[in-house]
Image (tube, rainbow, N blue to C red):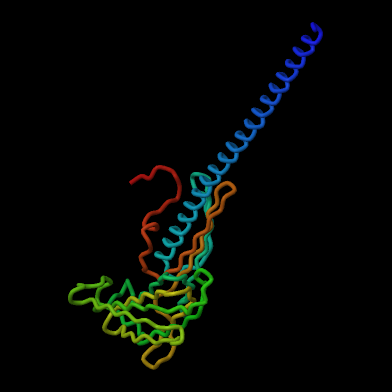
Length: 267
């Protein structure tokens, strides 16, 4: 009986040790798993931070190119620069004015300015704008035909502002089905300044716009269209921005400032 009791005691101690080993092993596995997750989260957070810095560098490249184009409307070139926070950007700017084209997703719009911001009283010689379009990027895989909503805003010569909305400014809106392409929009830049807004409905569309003179001959848009591509890099992250706009067009508020580095700005 005494020997059996000793055997039972040893067996219980063995089971206890086994449980202890299992608990330690489980704890180690859990600790390693949690540690791995923490490391992964730290790396992800660092990647997000690097990506944001790369995006800011890309914005700085856009601003640098816009400054070059403001100084010289015919500027075309490529430039790279390293910022104070070790981020860097590289951009190239291309200017052309024979036609204006863009690929728009559903409900996206594009603006065309038909006036010279430096000489608002100048006649650009445009009497018609011909717009062609076709199915572009499908919205949700839909094969629906894209329509164009064309909004025309005009105001008297002599000012780049819209004028008094009650007396001077006039807005007209047209809707055109895909089957109507191409459409001709009557424009008279001799007596009015104009803005056209082209918006896609029901699906994405690719469009091109060309200007015609009083003899119905194609002419270049007098206001050049600039395409700026900027790639910002920081550490292993890279972000790109592309801007397409006519000279003198005011861009979104995000481009109302210059961000070259994280250094203190002296005013």
